[in-house]
Length: 384
Ligand SMILES: Cc1cc2nc3c(=O)[nH]c(=O)nc-3n(C[C@H](O)[C@H](O)[C@H](O)COP(=O)(O)OP(=O)(O)OC[C@H]3O[C@@H](n4cnc5c(N)ncnc54)[C@H](O)[C@@H]3O)c2cc1C
Image (tube, rainbow, N blue to C red; front, top):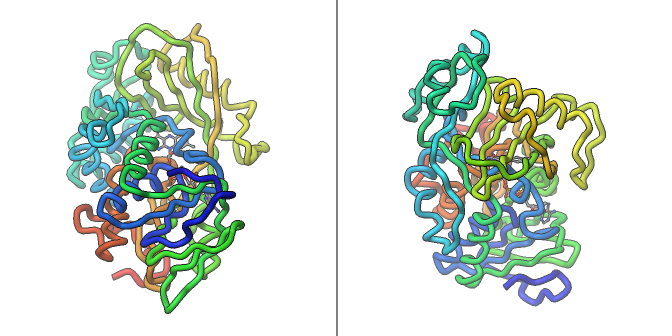
């Protein structure tokens, strides 16, 4: 059941999960399905963070090799049947990802990413400008090449997270919203206590999946997670006739986007000036992003020149110092599993992350998917 914090009765569970984003909801589903009792503590509403504001890209390509096992596992084994498993249409479309280049420097960058990804076992290749236009005929002649990963795609972030939430409820998980976690504490040598503005909760294990705010919560037990907050914006166009189904990005990350099931395009990006303007907790958009994004998009896709933008929003995420997540148990804090620092690309891997979290909590290590490169101790110098 979902409960407002004012009516909290249950305060102990096998696992306390902090954060009701896609990671918290996914972990709640996996753990409750195994028969564990689970309480999820969320300071706002479910999906109040990046999980309710992202663009839905399900991308394996152009990822750091340490994330590739999660991305490939999610695409090969989970995304195609996730809707069936959760009993909701997550609107998963697998029609490929083109990352576009307009200069030789862009192509060099793309080739570097492709080579690294191939080495890590991903199936993708470089395409010429002509090949890219054959896949997606609307792009400008200025595109001289692209990376092409035919198994990438996109899905609906809300439906995915709420699907996990619904199924977790079916398995008895309890979600408490409007309760802010303020700190962690040890009981009998293990992290079990979770302090909140509504009193204390206690679990055999604690999962920290509070996005950027995980940093402050972890600090209360001396764990430093090196993340900083990044803001990004998404624009929604009017409904358009079908043009293409690929997810698009660029070598320089000027913008990314795809067409949604109902016909609008979701286009995301930043102006590059976001660190110099005032963006606040309430997620307002900033004045420079729309013009800079629109310029970039029209440069690649002249057909968008007269398309109307009908809606926009911004959101923030937790960018790690080395650009990949922390999915990890912590030697100094037994009982604690960290799942944060997704660095702006966590949604696509979230179904695989939920399995890794479950195994870390239940078995102390992730055996289905190799997440060893994402351990917390990579920062402390104590990694093997
Ligand atoms: C604009 C934008 C576009 C993006 N596009 C993509 C994309 O196309 N593809 C992709 O893979 N990823 C994308 N992402 C990234 C993706 O959204 C995130 O990586 C993912 O949602 C992370 O999920 P999470 O559950 O870890 O974090 P969140 O969704 O941020 O959830 C954390 C939750 O913790 C709660 N919380 C925080 N502090 C506390 C506290 N003290 N007590 C209790 N609860 C607390 C928050 O309210 C929040 O609901 C994008 C992000 C943004 C912002």
